[in-house]
Image (cartoon, rainbow, N blue to C red):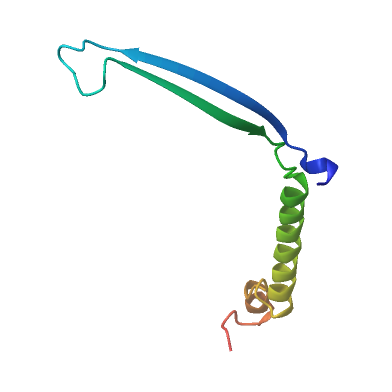
Length: 92
């Protein structure tokens, strides 16, 4: 097991004793004892910083590539300048 994924274990033991009126509830014999042993494992939370930074930078690179592609095909070009360059102002 790698040092980054060390598990810290602890045992938790619990006992319970239940007693009740035998005159009303006669099926159980009047006393019930329970023992429960639970194993608890404490794990370290994963480091999410590389995933967050990688996703953010990847999204910005994708946005830049998309904007560059739209610029190359003329999506951001305005026709207003072309209309002002014609002598009559009418589009051809």
